[in-house]
Amino acid sequence: MRDLSRDRDLEHFSLNTGTVRAQGDFLANLEAAKRHGISQVSPWREQVAGVGLGRAVKAIRDGGFRLSGYCRGGLFPTDAAHRQAVRDDNRRAVDEAVELGAPCLVIVAGGLPQYTRKGSAPSKDIAASRAEIRDGLAEMLDYAEGAGMKLALEPLHPMMAAERCAVNTLRQALDLCDALDPGRSRGLGITLDVYHVWWDYEVHEQIRRMGPTVCSPFTSATGWCRP
Amino acid sequence: MRDLSRDRDLEHFSLNTGTVRAQGDFLANLEAAKRHGISQVSPWREQVAGVGLGRAVKAIRDGGFRLSGYCRGGLFPTDAAHRQAVRDDNRRAVDEAVELGAPCLVIVAGGLPQYTRKGSAPSKDIAASRAEIRDGLAEMLDYAEGAGMKLALEPLHPMMAAERCAVNTLRQALDLCDALDPGRSRGLGITLDVYHVWWDYEVHEQIRRMGPTVCSPFTSATGWCRP
Image (cartoon, rainbow over all chains, first blue to last red; front, side, top):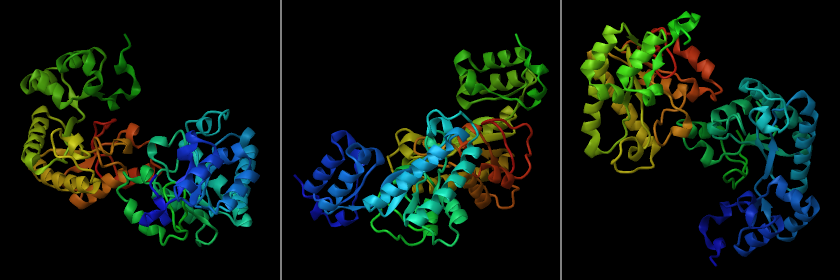
């Protein structure tokens, strides 16, 4: 077995446990990570729920793991009947991230309500979804700031605009950060995944706009950096 | 059979004959258009070649058709061995558009060379493709300007960035227009297809940047408007 810990760049490596969910539950994922010399992970909510939050917290502490992020909150667009449930769900995600000791909660914003939150009244109005994302994120940021948890907004590839995320470029994500956290002090940042942004002709320019990375390491779909 | 000519908006309607290529050759497409009261079309090069340029020109004139555009030139990224052939091919496309009486030639820029021009040496350098697009378009614009033919650059959805077109947002297309035709007088414009740009959060703002439409009507994938 290759000992990954001898790789020079492993200090910047984090295992997104969503990528190994088929191989075992969250506790099994942590054991496998340990065997490979990986000490940093980014869990998903369903995986944590699968073993229970308390057991997940204990396994992380006992194993000496650090978290690079917690996946994920957001998925804001819904309808009036489900809005309170979505708000509550996102607050629970913040609370769990605090419990787990994550440096940030990754935010996938959501697309059209019928895909984002099953059972919501359908809509084709992506501008309305974006307004809801802005409002939902603003409210969630208030809560997260109070809890001392950073939010890491992740732009997703435009092929996912309707189904999963109507925030589709780094420019758009940074425009949202500028609007909601203009002083760059409240803890709204960015998660950047090459898979989602490789095609964007201005991604390098927009990365410069982000400024210095605050939480090092940050990796695909799990990190936080200050806009 | 419904007589489309009684629809109020038919004056802004153009049949992109690429959408009916399975139903018959270009001459058959024109006959079908006539039967439905459609007097404006946008042909594809392969369809025109299929019946011969001379016959296509005659059928357009005899049928009293107007063209909204001609599809398509561009597909610039290639390798050194094929560059002259691509240049020649694009000049032929301009010449054909002039013969056909098209108001513009639609430009699909191309992605990575191995997909854009089969047989080209492969590359994963999308920045290099974009440099080639810029240089190829600059040179083609010189030729088209001399021939009195406008070029209508079309941004394609990012899901096609590698295979077909590395120009993926209206902002990016307009940045190219600004760079190559800063005075807005040489005939470099935009084709806009809702299919490709619907997801873009700033498409309305960028449409305003385009300024007034010059060639009315312009329709999905076939029109020209001044940036």
